[in-house]
Length: 582
Image (cartoon, rainbow, N blue to C red; front, side, top):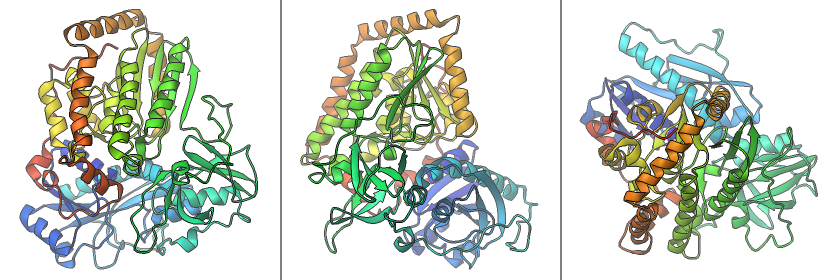
C-alpha cells in the first residue's frame, strides 16, 4: 500500500513504524505536521491509501480525515483520551496500560478503534517506557490495524464506555501544578513518580539554590538522607536530593529560561549547577553493588559463568567526554578479570547515540569539546577492537544511532532486541563520523552497503540489519525475555567447544587487516574530516547542532523522508559482507 506517516516529529516511534512498514513492502513517506496546508499538500502529492499518525500533537484537518482513512496511534488503552496519557499513568501508579489505534474524526482520541494492545507497566521513566513497552505495543497495534484495513472486511469498534474492556477515560493535560513536589511532605515513592512522569519532557519545575530548573529523571537512593529537598551528594553528573524518607538521584536539569532570554537545554545536573556544589560531596559510583541495593549507576559490572556484563545507561543515549572515559576505565577493569566473554550494553532502552551534543553546545569552546568527545569515544572503540584474548559482544536492548551504533560494531558479535531502531549515519548532523566506522562497517556489510546506509539517513529495523550483516542476531520479545536470552547466549559462547578457535581466528583476522592498513590510519583519516567539521566555520555542524540542542522547529520535511521512493528504499542483504570472528 501507499502509506503516508504524518507526525509532529520524526521521533523514535515514527522511525520504528516507518522502518517496519517499509520492511513489509509498503511504500512509505513521512510528512511532518508543520501546518494544515503542509498536510494537505502532502496528501495531494502522495495520494496515499492510508494515513497513519504515530505521534501527533495537533489535529488532522477535517477535509483530510473525512476523505481518507487516518489512523491515530494513541498511547493509552481503549477509552483513554487526552495529551498526557503516559504522564497520568505513571503518576497514578498504573500496573497495566495500552496503545490504541483509532480512526481520526471530529473529536480528539474518540474515533472508531482498529486495534488495541495492552502491556504491564514497569517502574520506569516516561521516555524509557515510551521507547520500549509503548513502542512494542504500538507497532503490534499498527501492524494489526494495517492488516485489518488491507483485508477490507474488518469493521472498527466504535468507542463505547459501556463495553467491557473500555477502561480508559478522558484526562486533562498534566501541568506543572500537578507535577509540583512538596519535598517536606511527599515520600520518595511520590517524588519518583512525578520525576519519572516528566522525563524527558517537560521536566518538573523546581527551585535549587534560588534558581528555577526543570528536573529530568529520577532514581531511588536507599542509604543517603538529609534535610528534605537539599542536595546531599553528587555522582557522575547526577545530584542526590533528600526526601522525607530517603533520597533520589536526578541525572539532568534544564535551567528555566528567563523571559525573553536565551534558550536552555538539558544538561548533566552537576554541569547545570556548576559553581554551586562546592560543599556537596562527590560519592564515586561503585561498579558493583549488592543485590537489592537501590542507587544510581550509569555504569555497572557483574560476572556470571565466565561472562563479564558491562552495563551502561546514559540519559538520552548521549555519551560525553567524561562518560566515555569512565566507560573506558570500566572496560579496562573487565579486561583484567578472568572472563571469557565481555558483554556491553544496558538492560533496556538506548545502547548509545554518540557524542553529547548538549554538553558540547554549552561548552566554553564547542569545537574543542567536540574534539575531546570524539577522541574519548574513539579511545573506547580502539580498546574493544584490539581486545584479542577473549570475545566481545555488543547487546543492543534499544535504539542506537551514529557513533553509538558504530561503537557497537567494534565488538565481535552484535546482538539486537527486535524492538530497537538503528540509525547508522552521521550526515544529518553535518559530520563525517569517526569511531573507526570506515573500518568496521564495510567489513560487516560491504562497501556498497556501507555507502547506502550512511548516505540514505533512514532508520533500519533489526530484521533488515540482520539481513545485510549489520547485526549478527535478533532477539525477539520484551526486555525481560531479551535479557534472559542475552545471558543464555553469552554463557553458551563462553563455554563453546569452539571458543579457542574463535579467539584465535579473531586475532588472525585483526592482524591480517591491520597489516594491509593499520587501525591508526582509519582513525587519522576520520579525524581529519571531523576536524574540518568541528573547526571550519563554513561547515554546517555548529548550526545543525544548535538546532538539535534547542529543538528548533523545522521549516519543512526533509526531502529524504517526503520522497516515497527514497523513503521506501531499504538495506539489502549483501552476501559478500565479512562475518565477524565469533
